[in-house]
Length: 223
Length: 223
Image (cartoon, rainbow over all chains, first blue to last red; front, side, top):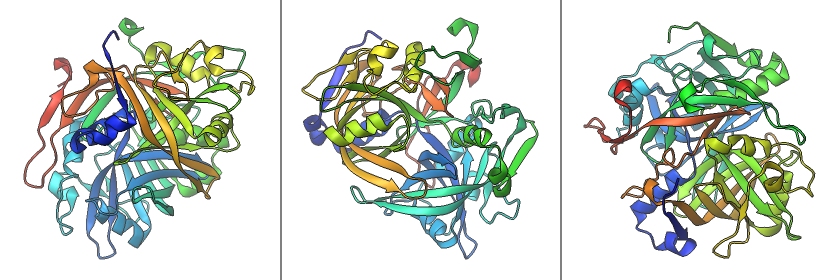
């Protein structure tokens, strides 16, 4: 890309208009894993919220992290997770990304975002938190650890995976799941959603050998 | 997708063959922010390593997190960050994704992965850690907090952004950066890299209004 390069220093960032900085910093850190978090309070109130800070922490045990702001709209989710210890992670597909985005509106606690945005709950395998029926990949999670981040008052919630549903056709023989084939989208910034194409898998890297392409669905015109 | 749905319980996950589970769990948590981390030891040894666990933590102050395994090949990176307090985050483009992947090979500590994989260091603005010259979006980071995750012995490193370089054409008027336009790829699993297309931005969500599309570059055939 032969575009002019812009440089921002620490001082530039400090002096930047706040909303501009929020957009810039949220989008500059790379693509985000974006998903819907389904919960149900002890009293039975269902809740659905979009999160874009999911992160793989480990496979043994199978751990997924996400960051929550205690003082934000996400607190219904945080309250329910603390109350019940369980939640679901549901991948988002492009055809209903607008419904997923709409869950970020500040609905009152007595409103189920499932109903408000037109998505459907699904309960299965005796797991107590609601899955999103429309979602092609669903995870059932149990809260394992809550770690406060003192720097900015956020909370890192780490959950252990207790249930996985996925379309059989996306699972490769070695355990890899082609989530693009399941229609999963990626997030960026606060409000951008991307469809994914042109997957390439590479072989395990060793010092004296260049990686091979293991699988690819890159279109001929792009190679 | 009319594919058969596979379900895995907590018990299935526990009994699963270890490498299969590693692939499954690494790919099931959604797309990953993948980038190259550049460091230099006090003695001047440069190091470059691919990380796929970057996560936005906050914009005020501008904080980015990443998880490191103390006992893995990443430890050269971890050692250098602890020693100097600084590192760089460099987005990866498809045209040299093989070089980025190759940095995950277990090179000896005395080898610079920049040289080994054919990428070039760039020093600027008196920032003491090396940027990747080939990368279109580069962040200069200062370690702000290190948080141990007792569940699996990993470490959450939180850094504050002190420098940003990006192509001017990718920066929108409200601060949003279209990282797909800069060629940034997304990761999945341990070894998959995806090109990104069809961006949609949606308006701020409010309870009584459906979100508008703010910007889109979706091709007509896909709408």
